[in-house]
Length: 152
Image 1 (tube, rainbow, N blue to C red):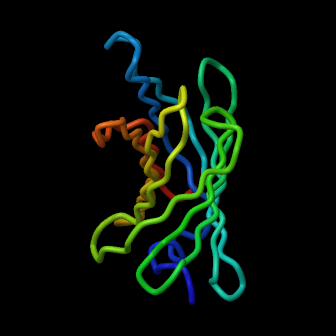
Image 2 (image 1 turned 135 degrees about the horizontal axis):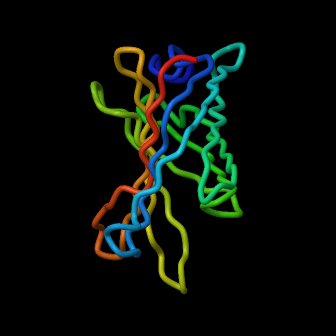
């Protein structure tokens, strides 16, 4: 089983901007934009893909990686790690919906409560994007990361 066409077609180097949304700060301090890069590589049999990316926050370089594969014919799964967001691997999965971004959902603990996180990958008109959302205890999603890239 191979990864979805959108990921296979995104193979290569990308550059762009990443926006980080820190919703707990005052409105004028919430959004931080930085230069960003991404590299998408697909395994020889297209069974998996790795997406490595970089971005900056407060003058410090950060990086992350997403390992993408198919759980079954209709489900994408990700293993994700980022140098700023968390220190352990998060597993996410979600149904593949034709015409929609490839969105996986996972959970994490914060102060003994279980919160949600989503990662959505999309490729459209040679623009690759990674969007992440934080999902609160009531199930309300708020954007956390919006990275948009063009071919490098």
